[in-house]
Picture 1 (cartoon, rainbow, N blue to C red):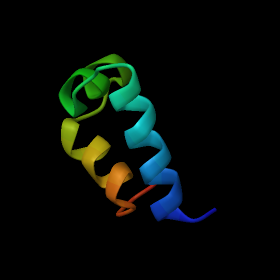
Picture 2: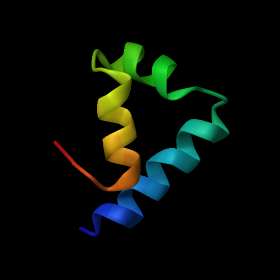
Picture 3: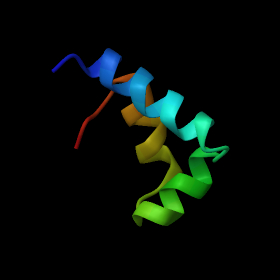
Picture 4: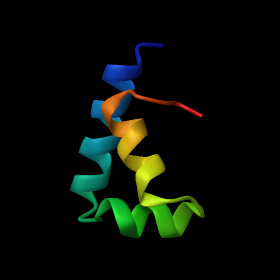
Length: 45
């Protein structure tokens, strides 16, 4: 799985739902920094 493509897909879905990184992070129980890393392909954990 390409981390950049996965991150772009996650970002597109988040924006489609009108959510900020902080809102998504709260819903998932993670930090907004984690969401940022996912979206940039920095980490998929």
